[in-house]
Image (cartoon, rainbow over all chains, first blue to last red; front, side, top):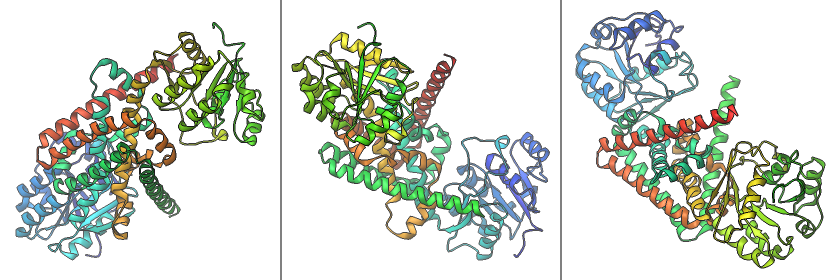
Length: 303
Length: 303
């Protein structure tokens, strides 16, 4: 496939990510079908030029689409594929936006292959703490890094098409990755941060007395605020994310537990030279990463 | 002592906290003596109206001051008190700005009592990631919470005077606290955040290969940036802070390790209802704390 101009894309699920995708594709020339469970959401998205057309019945949308992007919560993605496997257009490609890939890619490939439909997993590193189509905006995907998955089952042409599709947006880059490497990566870069921030919050704010609570409430400042920020996310969403990346999360979290234990032991044993060395190593690594990110931003701005 | 107007305060150490204290006291009417090890720092602070007078020899400053504020790194505070114990003015009061209190208050009381000099520990919750007198500004202490310590050894009049002294600044409030309760508090609200952020940074950025590093560097985003921010602080300073609060830090850190272990175990055992319940509890507590801080800010702005 050399051009996407005459193709139709279906966006299933018109929340923050789905509706922002519709808005970002406005000027691409690609025909945008859209569907959401609630008819009010479909109407709102049609009125606000998030999509070009919709249908009451999702089957009518799926039959018509060359590319279907499932913008649903993680468990709903696999469920939707299994329930609607026979309804996608033969030869079409299905992708998604879920932040776990192993479970979804496995379900997608198995369910769709019998129907001659291709599945390629995607994970755009984009989002805000908000949700719903009314929080959507065209720039959500700007400068995002997008992962697309490949497996021994992946169709090379379908993979190319999904990469081309994401390049219709103003993204930073598309990175091919195996579902296993992806899930290990996000376990480290995102999922265990949430477990640590949660442990901190429970340690500090779950108090034994009102007096202790009053002290802690006043004593916590910007350091605590930043370290604990991600604990204000949705517990249901994080349950779903962690549940669908169980083994990679447990492996990364246990490694981190071991390192934390080593840090605390250096303090308990009074080996403060070792503690300072570990802190120095952490500072060196974080400062290096911040420098890398800054250089990357500068480069993107010069484009 | 009913008024501080005719008193002299000596600021020992003219770094970020000491020089900002000088600037903040400019309009208070209190006479500001100042001393720093480097003569260039003393000259710069005189020229920029950070202090009213100085001397080459620190003894000349100490002999003249009714209140001495030690604005030095934590280990230097205790060292300074011990070395110069006989040089403070009889009947004068010595305080400090260190973020650990047990070790400092103990050293201060023991060393100064034989000379008829009072020690009251202070800990203003103020600072930035910068250092040095040229980073100082008059507003650093604005709206800060200041802890002052009391022990069975504390002189009630000296405690009152130090409270009055801090009220010369535009602070939010002064809170009396025992050194033990203070050190347990900061272990929770500040110190263990640093240990967790350090464990996370080492887990994520200490890589096994260049390929893994490239993936991790791109994969880390705003969540990681915020959770790891405090690891970019000074390793030497944090070694000193932790070293001087060893037992409270170890107790708080082990409790947090236990909670973290429980969170990871809920995932490993596939008990995601329990995981969601823990996350929900964390979100509830953090959101409640954020609401409290917002209400407090709104109230201060109305003043």
